[in-house]
Image (cartoon, rainbow, N blue to C red; front, side):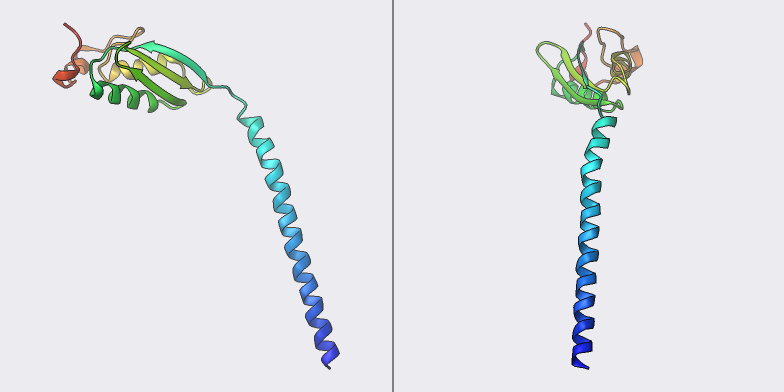
Length: 132
């Protein structure tokens, strides 16, 4: 009887060990194929562009960068206060410079491509009003 119990325990142990190894092997296979699949679908290259954007202060900087980053496909937006230049990285399959420029103009800031309408400009805080 003791031999029978011992054989059963050993048999179950071998089966459990074998099942665990096959699961980890299959998850390793999946882990190896997923990055290849991701890199095939994510083979886009972000475009870099610069856009002239009018503004004056840190509040303008925050607003301009937030609006730009809110456009789907924009991964980086950094506005240089001194140069009045917005540096952008974006996925050209999701957006373009025209769409980003229109969004910024809608927030009240003139760009090289689009002028903010008067109501949007008037809604800016006084410290952000750059038109003379």
